[in-house]
Length: 355
Ligand code: PEP
Ligand code: MN
Image: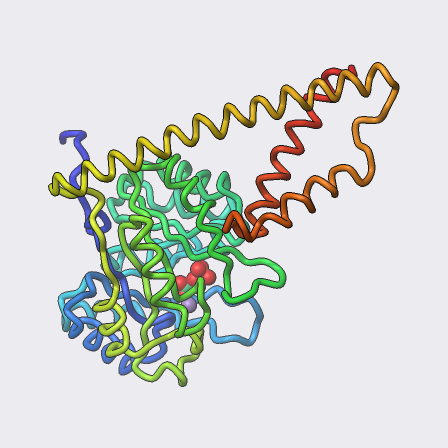
């Protein structure tokens, strides 16, 4: 056996996984499978067999019987199948019934015991596994799950960004926090990263925007929920769309390429990037000058026995800059974040001078 990694079904760029949040009945799953296959744009059929619900009493999936329906849907449409696994028994049953791709749900990724149990159960199998982000914005926990799978010899691993739970999230069911997913992607650049607009949005209207944003950020694919009669879905009804709507949505997403052969475009890009690099140099040299002055202030405070933090002064700095925010065309939130970072660095420097 050679060690070079052959590619798997999760490696294609523009990968689309779509289908039911939950397999509810044979009829619903087969109808979903035929509908998503008919779009001609879906590569893998998804369906939840065992559903981790937040509260007891919610629909928890039909269980093992749905594995037979998945196999039937695959025979009918030719689409490979994917389902969520949360423990070793799920893994064994899914593999026995020929499911082509497994994913680990957000609640499960959050629990290292469960991830380890799944990793152990996967030893010796060659099934690809997608790891959803944990519920909280914890990059280490997400990466840790990938490491556990790798240690068990799982060779084909991908990531799903499904957003993060939190309190008071506005506009989404789960906050996208793109920067967290991008950090994980930059630390595991060899892994495909899919976006799950359905669970990020929790509604139907936001799907296109989130999917397009993911495509623009060069995600490798999407996983989207679809149901023949979304309003009647037994789980996640608000966010599911019909296979026809799915086809329309997928038609509208523009997958841009990361590079071009156009000489005009490339030279213009090079010019603009050069301008950005020069501005970054200036920005940081100005910042260094600012820190130098902060240190001078620190020395002055020490000589005169003044505290580092003087009430009111920092507020004044913030207010002054924020008053100009409109003129700069920067959002208030961004300006506040930048100032905060500058403030922390200044205080640290003054602290060093004091001690
Ligand atoms: C799902 O994909 O239906 C699901 C339960 O998702 P998550 O683990 O992201 O909540
Ligand atoms: Mn769901």
